[in-house]
Image 1: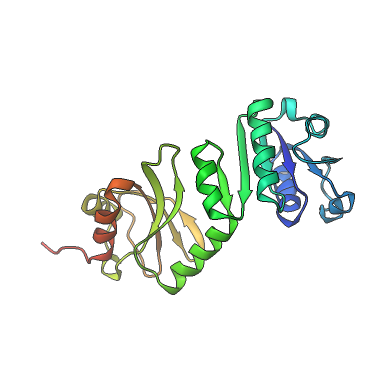
Image 2: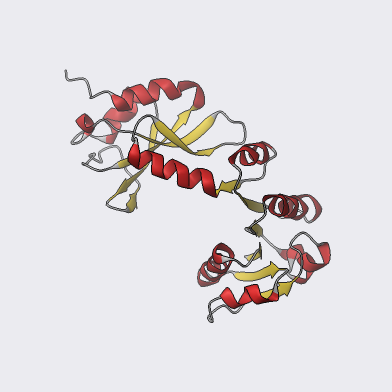
Length: 220
């Protein structure tokens, strides 16, 4: 696939290389020619000097044949304008924007533009380690009814199977982070000390799910 990136900062330059290493063609746009010095010497894609939401600059970067567009500049407004141009003017199927202001991120999510809220993500990660209670939302579907959340797990669940917690909570256990690595569990996976549990759940059921995770399993 062909990917166009707006912004050649630390995120943009790293993203460009990783996408290339995954077998994709990449073009990166930045209004500062010096920004391209951040690119790894192995980067073999195209660099375009210009404003990331300028149609001519985007065309030079191959936006008309792009399968995906990522706006990762340092400006929220620029990222959103560029994302909307990529989607609404050029019909790019996959569009994502980095947003610093979490309040704006929620608005643009509702407009159908997936966003990565850097400040909110970092804050949530710190909170989860300092006060590991309740749940921390990681993703929400476009309708706002289903979320993927990291949910605090009562240590009493250690040694119990994933299926037991799923039945008790009504949530689907999507992922376990264990010793720094991701694990996709099956129904017989057993929880271990230190596991971070990520579950898919209905927003309407969030309180009940949090309670089921926070309470130890019932013994029969």
